[in-house]
Each structure stands twice: as C-alpha cells, then as structure tokens.
Length: 446
Image (cartoon, rainbow, N blue to C red; front, side, top):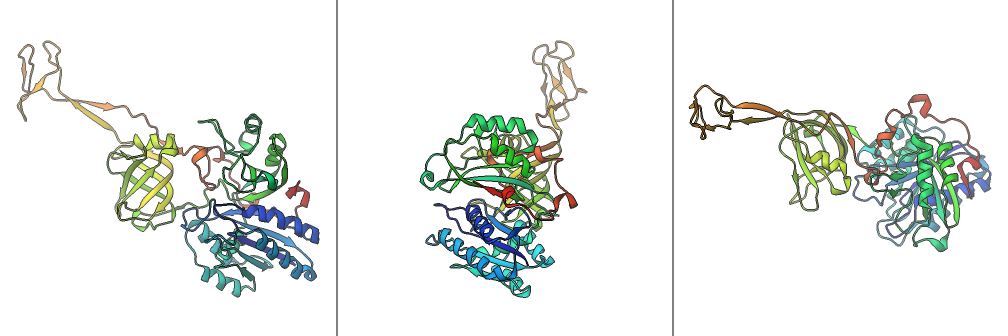
C-alpha cells in the first residue's frame, strides 16, 4: 500500500521543530520495515499567514508498506507527534493526515493555494473525507491544513534539498558550536551546488539557527549529493544526534504569484506586481524605505526594511516614473499604515530620465545668467549682457541604478525566496519528478 503521511504545527517559539519530529518518525518507520518512495518533503507554506511559527514548514513522508502494518504505522506516527509537540503552548495545534494511493488533483490544487494564499481547515477536512484519507488533530488541529498541503505538493518542478543535523538534548538551548571557517570553505568549494549558507556581505554564517530548537545546522543545495558532501565538510564542535535530507520547495519562489493589477491585491498574499513609481521614496524611522507604485487600478506602498541591505539602497534611489516589478508579501492595513508590500525583490524594468534645467552661460563673460522673468530672457549680473532669445540648457542626470533584478541579501531572505545564484538552475518537468524508492541510509543517519 502506498501511503502519504503529512503533519504540521508541532513546534512553538519556545522550542521544538517539525523536521525533528519527522526525523524520529522516519527512524521508527524504518524499524517497522516500510520502504520510502521519496526523500521526506519539507514544504514551506505561505510565509505571510498570521498564525505561523517561524518558517511555516510542513512535512510529508511517502512510503510503501504492507497492509497489515498500517495500524501500527499510524500508531507510531501519532504517538511520536504527541510526545514531541509543544502541546502546552497556546497556538500549537498539531495535525496529521494519512492519504492512501495516488494524490488527487484537488489535493494538489489545495497545496498550491496553501503556498500562495490562505485556505481553511473546513476545506481540508472536506477533501480528506472525499478521498478516503484519515486525519488526527490535537487541540484546534490547524496542522491538518499543513499536513494535507504537504501531501499535495509533490515537487514535480523546481525544488532543492536541505540536510538538517540535530543536536543532542543536553546541548539544546546553548550556543551552537560549528567551526565557521569550515562552513566558508564548504560554501566556496561547492559553489552554486549550495546556496544561502553564508552571507558574504557581513561574513555571517547562516546554516546555524538562533532559537532553542534542536537544529544544529541546515545545509541547502541543488542535490541530495551536494548537501551530503557539505555535511561531510562542515566541522561540528559538538555531537550530532542524527541528520536527515529533505526535498523541499525552499529557494524556488513557489509562494509568489503574479497579480494582473494593483487593484486585485489582497492582504497576506505573496505577489509579483508591476507598477510605476509614483513619487520620491522616503526614509522612515529605523532606516526603512517606503515607496509607492501605481497602475490604472490603484496605488500601493512598498517597504524595503533596514535589514534588506542593498535592496533598501536600491529602493531609496528610485524616482517617480521608474517602472518596477516588486516581489513580496502583502501586509494588511492598520489604523495608521495602509496595505503594504514587504519587498523581497525589485526588478527594474525601465529607468526614468532625470532632467535638470539650468540658466544659460553668458556668451560674453561665461558667468551663469539670471532670469529676468517669464519669457523676458536672461541677464548677466557681471557684464550686463541681456539675451532675450537665450533658453535654459537641459542636462540629463546620470542614474546610479541599472535595469535588472535586485534581491535581499541571504541573511534577510525568507525560506522560499529564490536567491540570485539559483537563477538558471531551476528544475523543470521530468527533471523535477522523483520516482522509485530511496534507501533509508540516503535519507537519514547518525
């Protein structure tokens, strides 16, 4: 029997990690004798939903097992989630979905909407009933939404990989000990096979998170082989309890959808918008840059926040008349702030010409002349020359921007944001599909 196991919402801001729950379940299912049909899927959902914790990632395990093992399999999954989830934290509402057979097209469509917009638990439950799946929810059971979405997203097109290494219990909550020079060396040696492991603008190492969760580090890359090689090159100065390789939609821009106009933009949606800059950008408290774009249907503010580094500088140098394509998540309006696009990328499509008009130089002595009034010509204050037929000279001010794509630095990028290094490496069609089983030893290890 082919079985898809999706689950979500086991962690909280004070600890835990859904990928770690996946690591434990993978080991317990391996002990049961199931076969894995794919690498475990780490599916990042819409990063703008207000109820997410951290990266808003859900998990799917795709396995083949004997029918006689189904009840024991489900029991092991449920028991592991119950043991590991932070159930005492308000807002942690785990959910598990078990879907047999092939994934229905309606579930695939549900997954796309969960990644690019908002979906309701009622719709998830309706699909679960319709296609003979089973669901288990704890407390409010909101994790059922993510569990079903993770099942529906089969990563048939672009995808990446992440190897996540986990800490031993006694080290959790302490400063992570990973040799930074080994991370830099790994990143340089593997080149474009890996991404977003180092922020070279600041020299900051990005593979180690900062929270109390059990993750020691995560290495992101184009193939399972590349992240495994990276793992072998990184020097951890504390014990590694276990590691898992995930296939994921991270770094693919899967969340972004092109809006046909500004007028159709809705709160919490990740969008790609084209518009003309309607005025000079302004810098507000904290160093954040706000600019507005418009089209025939309306106008919307866009915000490039201080941590976005060079992207903020690009936003500050825009001017009225520039045509831009803005990528980002839509923040709902508040009593004091209108609906705003939190900018992840800016593609400059056309730069407006900035013209400067200057009074002419005196043809007699070369000094800059003064205007004598509208249509009255110009007068030289030095030598007294009057030139009724002279006109102002026009200069085009050089722009310190170029047409092209500008992206936030790696330290500011969301999990789903596609970095510049991945452009041209996207996986398409058959290249993106994964068929056949995966040996346990290629997925997970200690």
